[in-house]
Length: 213
Image (cartoon, rainbow, N blue to C red; front, side):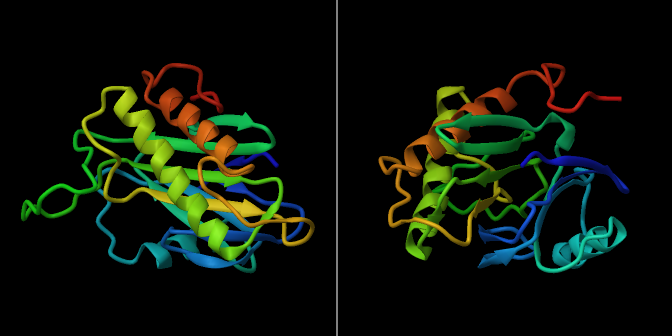
């Protein structure tokens, strides 16, 4: 399953599996765990100031003809610069935006208002079904791999305050009980996310998945 590039008010990446998949998402639209039919990752301006992102994403979905339950993400990054990495049957697509203000997860409160800083969004496809607890663990694995990639790349932070993750897996078939970084699915997931984030930190002109126009 490869994403489509769709033109809307900005560029949108669309994943549309041939049949519903089990998803876990931290995104503003379709968050939580459940069956989903599509995922979108949409570019918005860094000046974005809407306080109803779930409504905005539903509007985008309606405009491009999506029906049923789906997951939606927003980012200040041009989604044509998505990076894809595959490892042992796990695929990770990541748009990596850190702007000028990456954050440390455990930083002391500063009193500053959160700003749109680009956002790191990860959409990952897993080859087998995970139980709910393993899906939750796999989201943590993505966060650990992202943080490792940033620290190894010299970025002073563990991410941004608006990062989001979507994991997709089959609704049927053999079931995996673990999603941690040393599990059968979690280990390649961590490697794929780390590689995609590292690639996304390269200069903007370096080999986007979709050619810039």
